[in-house]
Length: 64
Image 1 (cartoon, one colour):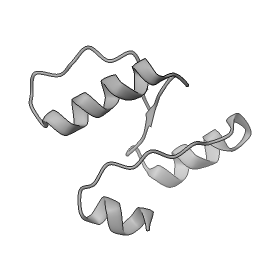
Image 2 (cartoon, one colour; image 1 turned 180 degrees about the vertical axis):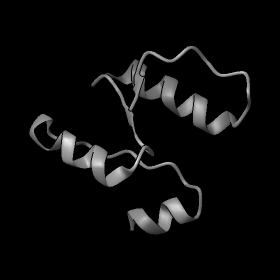
Image 3 (cartoon, helix red, strand yellow; image 1 turned 135 degrees about the horizontal axis):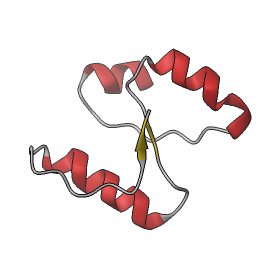
Image 4 (cartoon, one colour; image 1 turned 120 degrees about the vertical axis):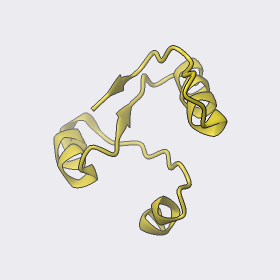
């Protein structure tokens, strides 16, 4: 389902354990953003992907 969503350009949120995160980054091939585990970070990320504009909202997360 993740692959189908990404093929359709639908953002996907996935929880990943710290232990598995390095493997996830390799698998994701640069198509991943690490968010803080809080609602504010999720909301900021969602606004940035849902607006689809070049004027990005200042993120409080790290692109990996």
